[in-house]
Amino acid sequence: MERGAVYQLGNSRAEWSCYNPRDDNSPCAPLVKRSRFSRRSKQTPDVETLCNLAQALGLSSSRIEDTFWETRLIALIDALLEADEETALNAALDHLFQTGERGYDNLADLVESRSESRTGESTGEFDLLLIAAPILAWSRYSIPSGPLSAEILNNLRVQLQAHILTTQVRLTLADVLFSPDQLPQTYCDTLRLTKKLGRAALQQQNDHIDPATLPETISFLSDTRYLLGVVAVPRGEAIFRWQESDGNRDIAFRHWQTQGGEALKPALPACAFELLPPSSYHAACRDADRQSRPHALRAALAFLQATLNVMPDQIRAVIAPFHDQRLEEYRIGMTLGDSAQVVHGVVWPLLEAEDESSDIPAQIEATLKEAGVVQVMQLEHRFPLEYCDDCGTPLYPNPDGEPMHAEVPEGRTSEIPRHLH
Image 1 (tube, rainbow, N blue to C red):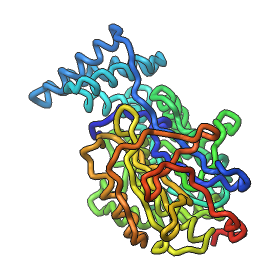
Image 2 (cartoon, rainbow, N blue to C red):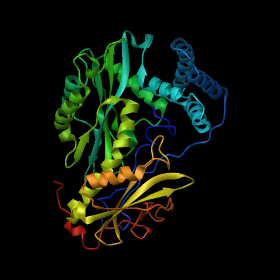
Image 3 (tube, helix red, strand yellow):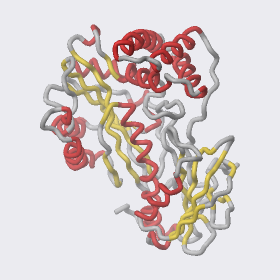
Image 4 (tube, helix red, strand yellow):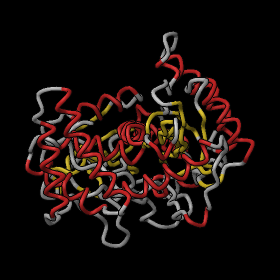
């Protein structure tokens, strides 16, 4: 795990504003998602023990000593997860990260691992692993989430077993396409889902998720969807196709993108989407967060091309850093030609170990130019992390260095096509 702000799924997703097609008459139509801020947590005996064990593991000088400390650390992590003591786990992670002490990465890895996998007497002769297959999607209409039909689910299961998983794996899939709002919000929630799906995997059945128990999904122009499942494999055996002697990771992913994409089409009508590599739950979600940022830019440009009939080389992009007490994100304002009016905007949040020393503007500019944008401006002065007082929409930089609302030019909304493609 890369060193960075304590990562918790559901609160750290890569987030951006987008057009809300259901409210064309509002000048504040774009919506925004916001990234998580760090917490302050008090020390308790469990927190102190977690920190001490993690630091000892970080100072270990041999694999034998690693095993000694890991055994004790895993036992405490398991006890806290089973007791729903999320606060202690987060407090220890926060303390180790904020103080810069050794052991943060080790503790983070083990907390993630123990929430997304199960081994031991409770699983018999099997190892269980919670996996996620992320999908990046965009649409002028609502991106679907929620229940998947039995036919779609079975087709996806066939493609996963054919291209991603080994033959000895037992697989269960949740019968839901999850939005980021519907993912487990804590490590303890993640463990509960792992155990629930794990029981179904051992019986080689798909698992039902009651849609009524899931939070409502907010509509965004571009967003991520997740297919979740648990694999059960005989203890110590290979899970993924590329772990086998004749397997190849890149080939497996290409086949999944092609065949899995065809199986998923009925679940995502009127959407342009891209399948990301399936992987263990936390790793897959981190990868989706990283990939969703350039995807949001490409989606924004495609949206402007479809709705305003403009090509990327007719769009000017303005990149600026936005700060609270520290640099939180970059915002990209988009204007048409020489106009100073921002017609659309995208938020590029910082993730993991990124800070002011990271060359994020160069990454953003490279993404824009690959998509065909010729005019790219980079503003260097600090902008406050401002939002519209009326609707909470972020303000985006224009070429004059002024934060402003993103608004489609008057009279141009009539050019929006009835269909996406």
